[in-house]
Length: 355
Image (tube, rainbow, N blue to C red; front, side):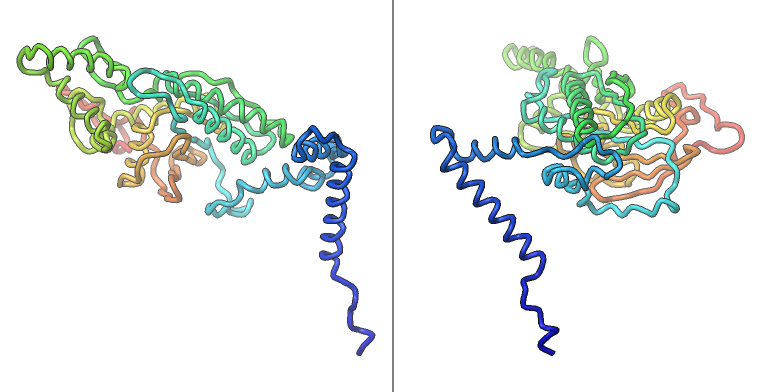
């Protein structure tokens, strides 16, 4: 029996001790032979960079086997989500995979501002994450609403995506970012025409100040509605919830925003079948899109958070997901729906009812 008793240490302990010994020897070398004017942490970093790099030309060995620990961690950190992936033989073929992404942190909403440094980091990180998720041979399309914050968001997402493809050695084709009118923010009827609700703020503020100073009679309805919307924002409330639940005659209805989003998705799907569509836009319309699919309000998306729409082959059905909530829906056929004006002459499409 005594011959079967192991007295040597387990292999994992031996490897750990060897690694610790190598680390201590490296630190001793840095302290004894290094430049004392350079901080120890910087000498360690430089020494790490002088170690032999992995053989990146070795395409036979998977990247996760031949890469450094940092690359391995980056490859695996995004797999810690709650989505359960079906086995390849059970997966449904997709016509398109759509990501409606809220813009990154912006400098403000009173003007058409761009992103803050934090917002740029958020967008770049999002692109890097998508590069880890997507596979070699896929096709990615970048589109955005025509505002500075949405444009800068998708530009930095694209840059992060390209960096990730290089880092993780993936060959993925992509389309350069372009604006699409279907994905604009919800509109407001100002005295000089339709405009983005934030673009109308400056005119609202100037006219409101004139009424407050001069007291020139009753305020027009457009000013009253805009005043209610923005004062809710200032008070720390949720103006998007008000837009979703309160009829306002000078604001584009949420249902119309959802309809044009589907129209834009269908147009991109016809143009880029099988592609993944990354669309940077605004929280109100994204939230309305989720409400229409889920049947209730799941809340405001954070900066660079997305609502995902997996559109299955045939473009009849789709799976909408947001914050681990999933709902399968029928893809609406926008051309078969009425436009809901006062002179409506809509007739049901031949061969069935509107979806």
